[in-house]
Amino acid sequence: MKATIAVLAGDGVGKEIVPEAVKILEAVGERFHHHFEFVSGDVGGQAIDSVGEPLPRATLELAKRSDAVLLGAVGGPNWEGLEYRLRPERALLGLREQLGLFANLRPAKLYPMLADASTLKREVVEGIDLLVVRELTGGIYFGKPKGIEKIPGGERGINTEVYTTDEITRIAKVAFEAARKRRRRVTSVDKANVLESSELWRRVVIQVHKDYPDTELSHMYVDNCAMQLIRYPRQFDVLVTSNLFGDILSDEAAMLTGSIGMLPSASLGSHTGLYEPIHGSAPDIAGQSIANPIATIASAAMMLAYSFHLEKEAEAVEQAIVKSLEDGYRTKDISSPGTTLVGTKAMGDAILKNLLN
Image 1: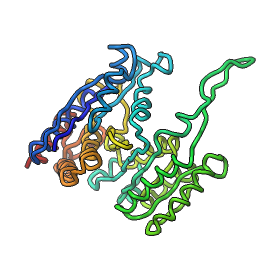
Image 2: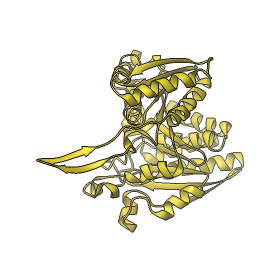
Image 3: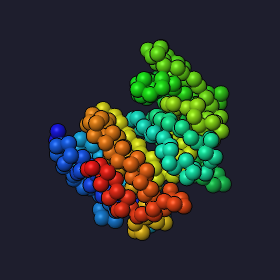
Image 4: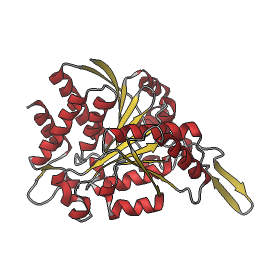
């Protein structure tokens, strides 16, 4: 097959980890006889520095005409003082909105050889294999009214949580379809005892579930879910939730696996999917070649599976990651006594070697 991939490395460690994923995709093309064209664009802080805005029109147009987008990370202390609409993070919201990326899939699976890298006890984290399905274009991040306004004696910040039946229906369908390929259990996370938007969320999810009688549905309040992820994470298969709750819970789930540097994500809509590690730009370690590239490489594997329907190729990348970990290679965030400490490029090279063997 032939495909065009927009490569948006962004800021911080994004410039180090994205090239490692690109070389893995190039190797997949070589091994399985596909042709991937990689076209780079500026995004986030680097775009602000070059053209004065976080999501230039040229980058957005590149993303729209590409078959998939590989994104690194955006943000950093250099741009924290900017006006809100000009901050690097606005590029992410803009891409999601303009590409119609309403479903964010974040798998959290513990590699057995990394059980001791988690801050939780081995007996708690062993066997973790869950998927957070986060609604991505609705909720409090996009609801209106929003903003900061003057009031007597100070200011008032406003954000509005808004969901419609259609928005909830389509994300619920994604969750149930994903569960059918896994262990057929969906936990819908809300705050229906307090929020009217969550009351609607629960009603709609229950209605959608009628079309999936082969799949189990349960409901959990978000505060209890946050606790249960720490207490007994193996109980979960697929979690489906709103934009804000999913943002928080998926990062919590990531840390169960030992490092946020291990977790990939896919943002899906009607056409162009966006793939990125869930960690940020990590400016504290940027430029040191110690960042973990596995999350970005695993995101590339998700791209192969979800955008290009190349399941065999995606599995080959996953197995190359596993083999490299079995060989004892570790970046700093997941290192332990008796393992081989390597940098960003060396970890990518190890995965590349195992992919081509």
